[in-house]
Image: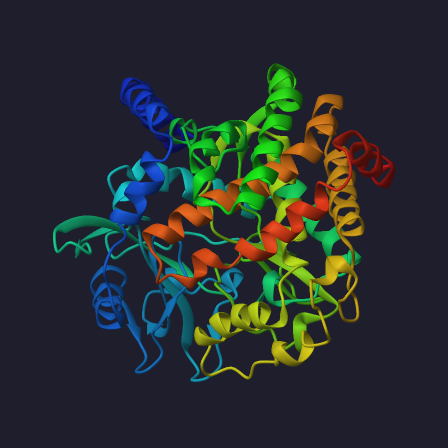
Length: 478
């Protein structure tokens, strides 16, 4: 269409204009790979519930209900849940599945105030919005950016930082769909296999997508795993040695395959805190479109979301153009980490979700997960539905491989070879960057969520040689 042509030409102009700036930024970050990560901590906005109400009213025309606003977990942004009313029909699409029956006419929303780094580069937020549209069109439930009163998907507002300086921050409003987080569930092999298939659908949906802002130097990009080496001194000796060994395998096994690994834009963070689950048949993927965003909640399922289905994927803030197989490696790594959450950590995850849904009846995950997990389900101490590391990895990888094959994008030989080491690399990156970020923001418990479980998962995964794990995964997919 004519409008589509105009949008494409505008995007192409921005792409050409951005190349010199992007190259300069990449050069600067190459000399200090943690520059972006450190800036995000410094540039995290300061906001409270009262400010959320102001932004919701003035920017998006929604009226939060008294007492409904809750601060949600966030890595480097500020996210607020609210139950609100609005006279704007464009915020009430049935496909968003965020209508609330109590009181009638109200809806669930998330107001997101972006960190200063992304606010200075709104092109990356635009990249996220475009990627979400493609994933929704592929039938996977995910957020969409709701239009502001001015009809823009990205609004802006002045907001202070921790040092008192004031910065112009990007603000988005997204529909919130109540659901359980995978991290608060007890996933069995069937659910993990389904997650593998959903992850493949996300990957395939993004396979033809590109955007200049996705081509970036990013500490969480597994192609840049070696950049975490300066962080090793932050770790205890045993952990340091384990991760150093993982880095040596990355450099000897994966890097030589680099030119043979297909590249594309990936979601980059399909983890247990970004996957929504609920009762089977909950409609999370129906209707050919996505329905919204959540940071936790309740779909009314049985305790621990046992026997649940994958409803969708949230948080596109780690989008990056990299090796395609990294999408699968990341999802598998976090599935392994989740096996080692003890009952307290899983209950904490659920408590965080519960905070955002004060009016809904929540199942007790503390009861569901208190069945003697000990060292974690990967050590054989779990409750009903527990799986071990190899079984979990095989389930997720086989689900991904089947769906990717169905869509004509099968895993290649070099991808299979690199996969076991890349799974270990993601856990190693999570441990190193998590330790670094926690040292910069020690009051943020969310940053410490995967540290101990991650070390247990990495140690167990590295018990077998990568070549043996490759054959195990290949046989499961076959």
